[in-house]
Length: 126
Image (cartoon, rainbow, N blue to C red):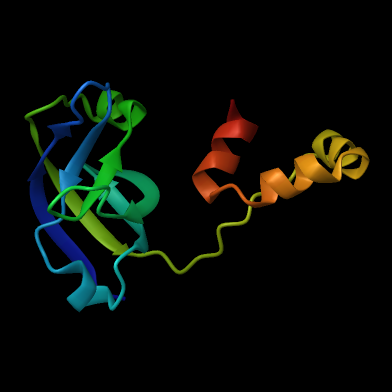
């Protein structure tokens, strides 16, 4: 599978503690879609996410605060990035106690099932 390696500046999302990097190539040309799930390395730290537009004139991928802390980088710093298409399944195993709750509340289960992989992961990992 093709890997894309480049350096990128950590950019700050206006008014938030969030950051992202811009993707320096034509995402639609390379992947054939406008939104693509990827496995990324930011200065060697792995992240699974998606390349998206998010209302910006460019494609981007978010860089979490946790990753910024691990790589000891902040807004404006240049980081090394490696990206490849993520073809692995993104299912999350539901803990038994949550399954019991879902059996009693179908609306909660349907709500959960409509969440993205990242949202499910955040709920289960608190």
